[in-house]
Length: 436
Image 1 (cartoon, rainbow, N blue to C red):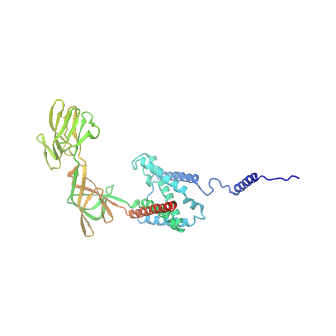
Image 2: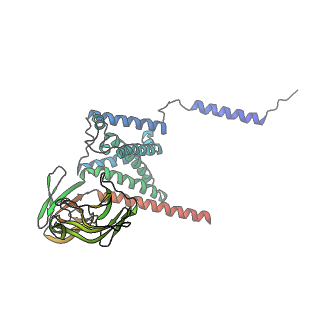
Image 3: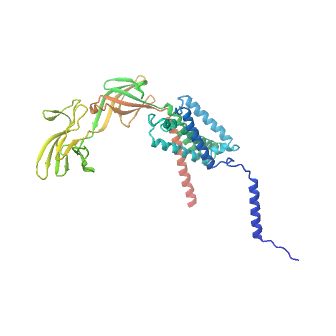
């Protein structure tokens, strides 16, 4: 009687097929939308949101999203944060909430924002730009459009739920995760919801005058909680430059660093057998009696007496050049087939000596470009002047900016930095353990 023997290899293979068949039949057939959702489902939802945002823009006739000002925006932000905190409690039993805190939602929402930001970078963000469809789809006001609002909402939901979930089961190793996610949430939420409270005004004040009003872009006057008196407005200029230009087209004839030189006494410029040298330079001068005289009048402009020498024939000629101003015409000097011109001098530094008064207190300050002064919750920046008068301007244009949400954003940035430092510190410790 023959005894049947079993091949262990065949039996093992048969068992694998049997287990695979059992697993396959045990998995319910839920189709494309069966949880858990991955990248494909997330991308489809993001596309639907994009189309929904554009549809809302068409329905609202391109009005965009209007963020309510303080304190309503604060109430909305607190309500949104509490909603995310409650949703995070249900994440273990609610697959939709767990999906909102997943990596696919994070990556797709960031890509969603990146696409819209790319559109904003390509197209001018100006209400006057484009036609009807550009306005209806929000392409000329991307950052207040409905699609961008949806992308912000999804990203904040992802960050907030993920941070609260780690916070509820807090461990020391979760600290950097919570700091980074919560910090980024605060930065994005504060910068978005606080945009309605950002005020950017202009203060126009003449020397010897005092004002307590600023102007909006629509030329609406706004009363300020302080007074400002302009004592003096001063400007320093770079020396003007001189260069050769074509007599017919006005284009610069020379190229490279030697195309122009600063117009100061003793400076020289060479071109095609001609050498021009500055004999005299007057920073502010007026043309009288066939020449220029130093003057401090408003219509004065930079002027220089120059001499041209032909290096072949030794022919010499003397004349004047001037950049001119709003009140005096420019003067050129012919050199061979070209014309020697003086460029308009550019501002090197301009500042305002001001007196600021707030609640009975007075202080003297100097306003300069990129050196703001803080007063009564506002920051004052030296912005501009009367460009028609230039260095003779008696008008100072000061920009006043108030952003009450800025400390909130700074808090988020500080949390991000702390989270990053902890990542670096933890990484250093792990490498040290592995190396030992």
